[in-house]
Image (cartoon, rainbow, N blue to C red; front, side, top):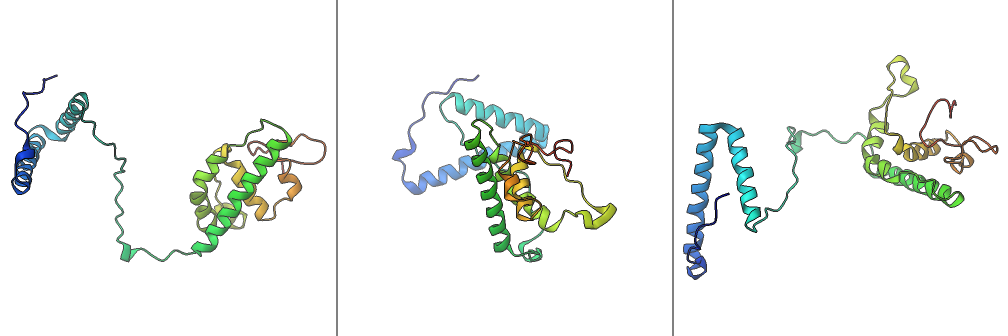
Length: 200
């Protein structure tokens, strides 16, 4: 690794306007150099050079702040986006009720039998995505052969159970028997939905 050159005279003594102008010229020189590397060596070489510069900066006490961004750019302008097909406020309210029911079910089960667990964060982090799917995209039994078969992570089952409860697919008693499906008092809800444990 190349060592730092001897310290240059500080810029702090320069007038603000002159310092700003010097910064502009220096930045442009760096950009011109990078443009040359891209043109001459390609983008891969430029990326390698930038990685080396980042390591060099870090080594000499100048860590670069991490900024997480994705390469996704929406190709539909805001004006061209269609109106949301549902009632956003109502759907948010339903989503919150489902989240609440999932939490209540898991906490209640853990009070009855310590250590049952319940993986609440899986559904909580995917609730909006799944609920938009349920409300506007997924096709159920009424679609016949065109119905959708949705596979989701088993850890998200508390949210699925809570939604099923809201839809009236089972009663509160079954919700109270989460991860206790082998109890003689009545059918419960498996840790992860399975046709052998929950044939109905």
